[in-house]
Length: 242
Image (cartoon, rainbow, N blue to C red; front, side, top):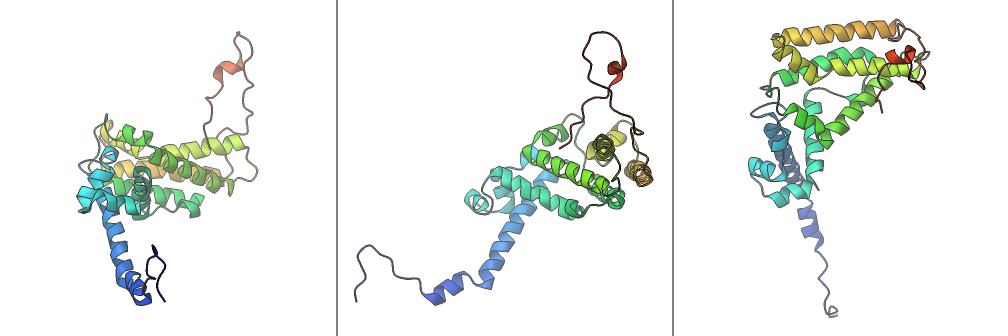
């Protein structure tokens, strides 16, 4: 029986099996890993958080593949950067989904030690650009959410505002920029900077477990309506927490 005009012959089952063979899948996995490794190398060199270098073109060159191959695995530059940052988290031992209050100090130590092994960015370059990037914004939001969840498990009686302040303080200490400030402004050795930050995190963890809320159970000052002096002059700044 003749095949209708304009149709393609059916794929031979044996050929389909060969195309989907374990060898092909392994080659595909290896290519993806090579692309991600190239992105990680660009992110870390010649300085930490060299985010502008992580582009489709530069990653393709670093990995020894063409740009179309990169797009085959990652549909956009944002998707590629998200995957590279996920690799950073995996290599530095971060598991935000399972984070508990007792894990914060040890997790932050692993993160800071990971970045301490990478040449730091100059004070005016790299880190600020990275923090404005959408990928880092997403990661920061996930981290804030993980810290809030970890605190909520230990503070059933606390007000939401107390939890937000405690989470914000932990976020401030578990932060590469805080580490870099200690290194650059105070000229602390890497181990001393990391030790100081994780020491403070440990003190915060103990205070939270003991039920000592950061605002001491105080009610927030009411919003100021008039122009005269009053308690509203000393109200804390807004709490940005998602």
